[in-house]
Length: 276
Ligand code: ZN
Image 1 (spheres, helix red, strand yellow):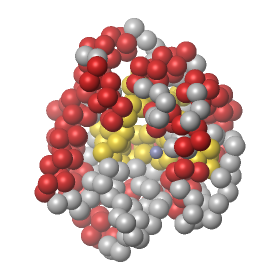
Image 2: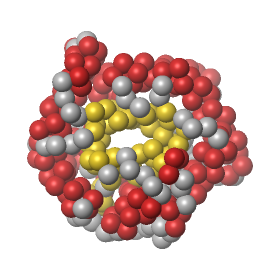
Image 3: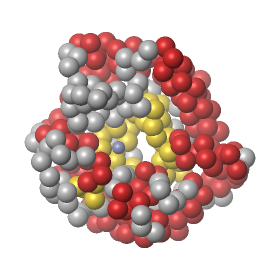
């Protein structure tokens, strides 16, 4: 697998330009850019500066993160979501970025909708978004989150959705942390059953050994520093035939306060130790 970096990891003290420069310095192959950070960057820089960076670097863009709460939107929210999504498609096309990460809707309480409702709505919205993205040459990577407030919490459910959509430009993101968040990675076989051509992105993070229901993104740790069976998960991801990126994705406030260079340097070493 190739080494990737997701801008969530240092989003508080870094910016797009610093992330690009540091990722190149520490030998990352790919970067996943955040849409909020991209918008900040584009307030002060023309898009051509980003294009020029990638033209002169071995670092490549891999995905834009993320379009969230895609399900069950009322029209005003849907219009806002579409505005952001079209911005993502245009930017992705301009810099040669192949994927956009899309995330199911999170409620304030545990999701109570049944799976059929979630499947039907997800097929509808993913198809609509993929129809918009297709002329831009961009694919959608649907990322289930194993927190019960999300309407799609696991890989089995997400794969059923992606299979029901049935198109080659809609696939999955597997995130070692959000996978662990569902059932502490009790079922690795579900990963092995993903067809290789349906797995688009692999996010890599470890976490603290806390009970489900307490554990959340703020407890993410560098790969190898926590309790997630990352080598076994990575092996299961490889067993699908996937050979894309393993992308460091940390949302830990303590890391956000640290020097971005330290996070990006240490993160590269920690990811490489897991990937072998
Ligand atoms: Zn992720």
